[in-house]
Amino acid sequence: MGSSGKDIMAVFPTAMHKQVMKARLKVAQKGHDILKRKAEVLEMRFRKVGKEIIKIKTLMGDIFKEASFLLAEARYIVGDFNHLVLNAVCKARLKVKHKTENVAGVNLKIFEFYVEGGDAHDLTGLAKGGAKLLSIKQTFTNAVEILVELATLQTTFKMLDEVIKSLNRRVNSLEQLYIPKVERTIQYIETEMDEGQRQDFSD
Image (tube, rainbow, N blue to C red; front, side, top):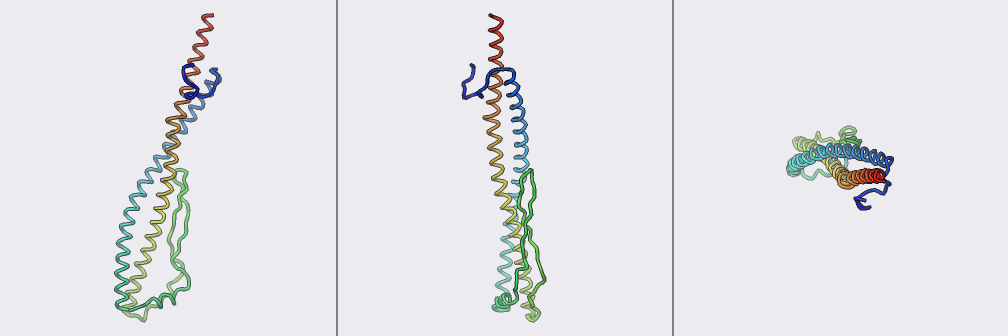
């Protein structure tokens, strides 16, 4: 035997087993190519999401700075208006729902921001202060929308990272272990069959 038992699969060197090994090799090579292409598609999405996260975090920082400034300004003009807001709120208007998006066989969670119901806050009697509060509300609404978008991106980023690592492990296992072992097994079968034929001729 030209190869050790650890380097090849446990088979008898026959024509039938050679065909079985060739079929296994073909399936393994096809599976390897499919997994590799899938990993490449997901890696492209992964890199794109990473860039979008950086952009969103920068934008989020700017929006929250603006919101904090407007809040401080409104408190200076109107005074403590927390009770006005709390008394006007019965239930949440800003809500989040989620759906799934299939990317190369991977279901990704997509969070969507939406507004439900009318605005219950009556600020008409606050004159200039009312305008300030409306501005704050819109800015914080924008901030919530950005946070929801960031949640989608970060959830997608984490899931893609885990799936890509798993795919790469499977690709490497096929590439470095399974496929070479099947190829060595085929080579062993061919060598043993040739040796058997030579012995038959010499007898």
